[in-house]
Length: 240
Image (cartoon, rainbow, N blue to C red):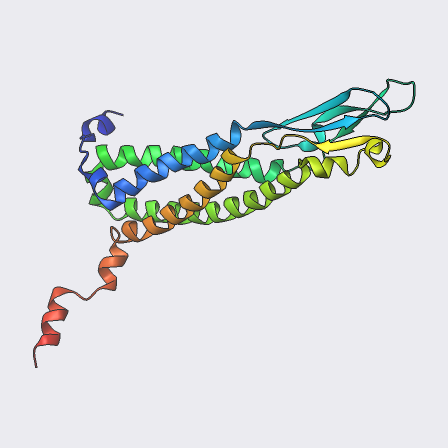
């Protein structure tokens, strides 16, 4: 512990370099990705007017992260003559796996960015004095690049399914009272999917940032040094 404290030396210059600056962007977009998904909740609705001079019933259906839609239930009037009974319905689908995987990748990416930024600004000499630090950093960054690709693609598909399952028009298609032409059914307010659309976009932005950062980390490793010709080799090639 004392060795770690003694080795700490605050230096923010790495944050001005591409390696550190991109890490800061990754840190910001990782927060945005998991926060905009994990805190989401919304409501979809439709209207039913039973035959005769009955009042219009507005049915509101709430759903939220992690999008286990089959657990969201709502009551709909049966619209039977001289009866006020209601019937329970549920939304269709369970998209929790893709949503939770996306959020998990975002949280882990945030934690890694936080820890590696501490290394960049406080333990830069320790990071550079051996090749182990940059190599480990490169491997972890490559793994997160792959995870962002998988998580963003899966959640993009999951979001499309959530939009379809919560569409008011889709809900009206399986409501029994709406299959009777004497009852009037109409779609209500659409859910607000802006935050979720932004989360998918930020996921693919993270993919680009983490993938691009692999190059700058690669330049810190001995692999890059070995890949290029040495100064002596370059001088030898110039001589006839």
